[in-house]
Image 1: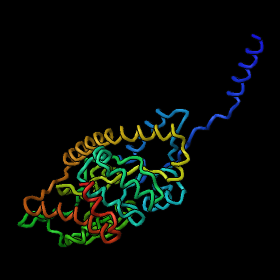
Image 2: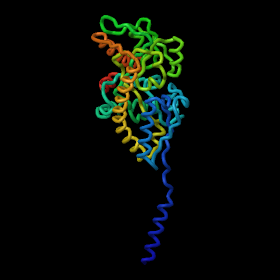
Image 3: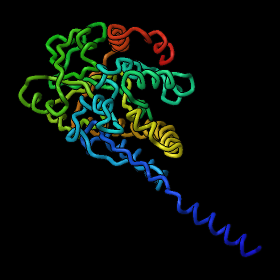
Image 4: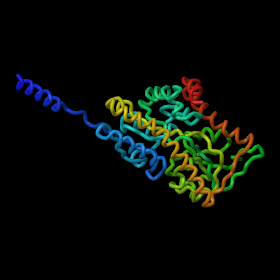
Length: 325
């Protein structure tokens, strides 16, 4: 009898080990800036965090940056399933999910968005329109500055005089520039250096993060304060690829995402301060907007995001405005 029990137990154990183990989930990813830029470095820290926590369960394989898929095509590439995960600003694929404007106009943090229902709501929209599952809203706490070749003038009300300024723009802030009287030229980041070199533009807008890596500070000697818009950098996944993950893999990603939102915000704020100080020590001069002009500038920036969203699809505007402000 005892021998029969031992034999039966051995058979059960053997059959358990014979069951095929679920293979490690592998996620292919692309980031929106060249690897040396701070935003890409931040994403790579997230990747390391996930890969360490998810060893044997889930692994992110980074395929590269815009040399693999241009950043303006990342949203469509994810939507179609060409790539599993993207690290990309919402502003670069507003034609797919116009509600991404809520991130740039937001006055709340990612962790507040998770608490008040804003994250759940915007995630639903991305799933429906972009076939995307939002993973994290990262690198928050800093904004965009205007940088100019020549010293810009400030009007009596404290706002910058935009007459004569030809600024490189992205789709995120072209409408804003148009509304305040600047001439905005939409072009890829990779073309900006040549445009500055040839005098095709005499300024641009970009965060301080990564600015020196592009070499633009060789031409622009003035930074305009205050910054405008908030960071809208997202980490997201193709929804089908997300649904194919094991529950354990999803748990690893969700935990890492919530932790990294705070970590990346702290890190990017520190990098922003250090980068601005370094450029100032190298001769970058600061022009400050003040008073009524400053307030009007910031109000126009926020208004442009909500106006653009309203024009494209007003369905969720009021709800998102309430949740994200």
